[in-house]
Length: 224
Image 1: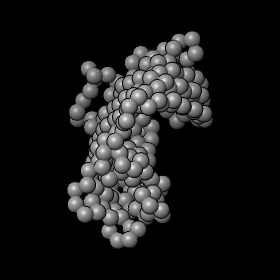
Image 2: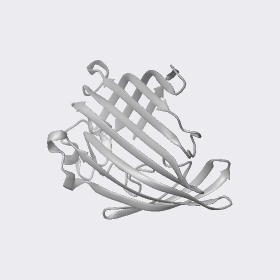
Image 3: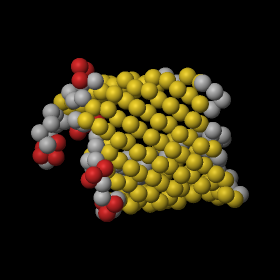
Image 4: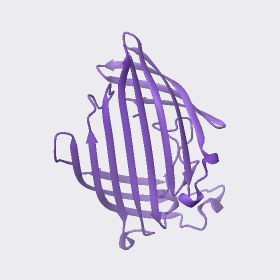
């Protein structure tokens, strides 16, 4: 069981630059563990609250389905001991790039890293998988203090409202930089269908393939 709330308050400081505070609250309660040893004796009930600062640079032409531009977000959060089960901090970086390459074709690149410092509870560790990155992996099956992941996607308009996408990606979770092992990097690739139900807003159906697992994702808008 999990309840999470996160809010960013970004203020425009120039044409494409934004800066502001961020706050979050997370209550998680683990039940019916098949392998309780995986949480290494941590509390099953974890409360995490944070305050921090967000910086964003955004030149995308359209947020829902960009054809060109750059998106960069850097977020630093602090989880103080007086309001948390554990005392730790987290740095999150997203960098996306979009470029038209031929008629109807867009190349999109996404890089993400989350680095946690201190006594990180199991509920707030970096998680691999889901409907946006490393598609096809069950979210949370692979988790640790830190994650580095990237993907590159070709988006091609086919006919009228119909488009197809192909992507490849990779990701790695690790305890700290001293324990980073390139051989533990997991692959990801897949194919997707897009139907534009209104201008630059797509319904997407993705089939993602990972190491030993696959998955379908149905959602609105692009994965990134």
